[in-house]
Image (cartoon, rainbow, N blue to C red):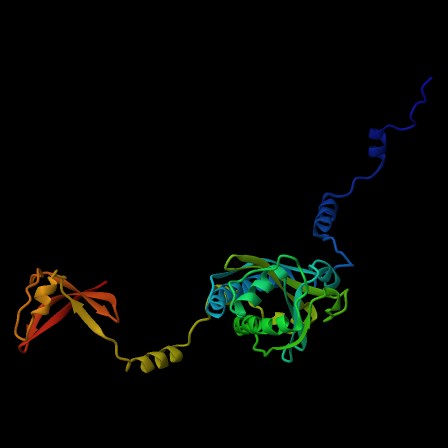
Length: 319
């Protein structure tokens, strides 16, 4: 004989008091506000600050793409891949071994950051700087002290562009204080410290490799408070006094103003035989309008006229 249940589910629900509707809504809202938190890998930069870092380093990629072709005399392109937070130990474990790492110190930022290039891009850069065509290695190996010294010129160009893109937020000087080929020998912060890792894909000629910048968050905390998203999207209003001063300064600047008639083809033999007093006939009638250019940029339309025995152009409409 089957055992009968003392109370059914419906009877149990009837005995338990239902929470008020307001309390249920508050409990649901409270649960929706709960955000998972990883105590082993806490995020010390907010999402807005990470987005600001992304925009800043994307500008750095565009600037470096313009500087490297002049320095290496080769087609170069730098593309930002990612900006993320992670522990310093995880960053080191993600690097290839061997690789090329430069420690860059900054007194203004009160810390140091790392610039890393894997062998796929480091050795083609070395080859180009030594007069080659940018050939890579057949078998991977560590860079020698002489090769690291050659690469310092390349890192100097990177640092110059990096300081320039940071100028809107903070100005600082940099100095290369260390060179390593073994990732485990690089110690700029403790392994459990949080760092911001910026990864780029770099293409120089036919060579393509990865470059990364490791920024300790403890060093960034002194400057991230200066991040302002609006500074990337809109300009601050200009004071009227500043506008008046600017207009007063440029009011004395002289620009070349020209007006061109319709071009007419001329044979080389006729051009060679031209002398003073000869007349070149054009197809431009007096009634037709002419374009008036300011510094080689067409700004107005006008009509041909005569004044005090001289041929002049009267401005009729702006373009």
